[in-house]
Image 1 (tube, one colour):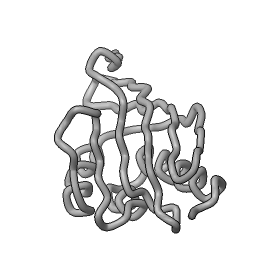
Image 2 (spheres, helix red, strand yellow; image 1 turned 90 degrees about the horizontal axis):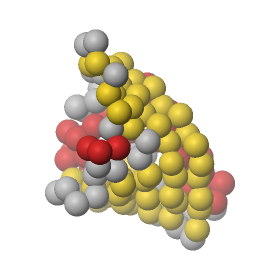
Image 3 (cartoon, one colour; image 1 turned 90 degrees about the vertical axis):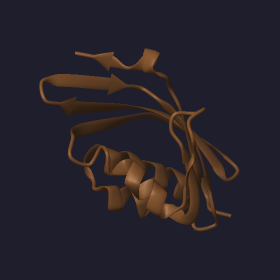
Length: 123
């Protein structure tokens, strides 16, 4: 099993990649058969190809992230963070809570993002 420090390191890499990396950088953190449900209640993306297509939507956007807190228990982590994206003159700010599971190499096996449109702040 991955250590808590290994899992925290993957979470930090994920936050950094979402903030300024490519879709490929993000997907490299996932296991081949991983799932992404973002937001919870939406159709899950299954496997790296589907997950890559999902993250490619944010790739051309100006974005930044800030990690607030991480809690690790066993092979899972829950963390809160802020992601700010700019699209033209619009700025979108979201503070989701993500829950991830990890394999023995601290690769992400599943991600569920808890947020709704009501949580999105535009400016």
